[in-house]
Amino acid sequence: MDQNTYIEQAAAHFRTLLTEQLNRQERMELIGKLKTEMKAAAKLLEFEHAAYLRDKIKELEEMK
Image 1 (spheres, rainbow, N blue to C red):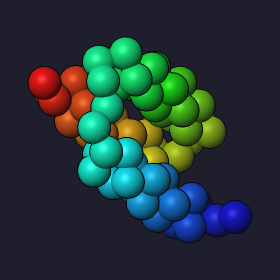
Image 2: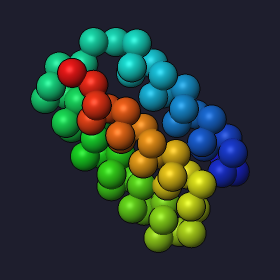
Image 3: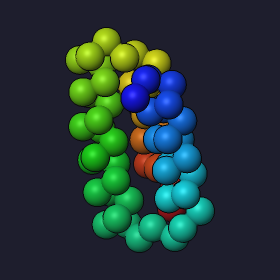
Image 4: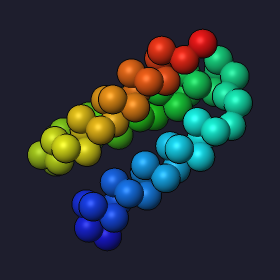
């Protein structure tokens, strides 16, 4: 799978999750998983994907 396809699938998955009501615990777990994925993407020099994940993490952290 190429990087663009992966990013598009991640974006679709994230939009689906945001449309559902996540409780605080679920949101914190998702943030943890996204942070792990972000670090892995940066390590693989996939900086655009890492930046995308960073932005989504910020959105989740700002949700109440």
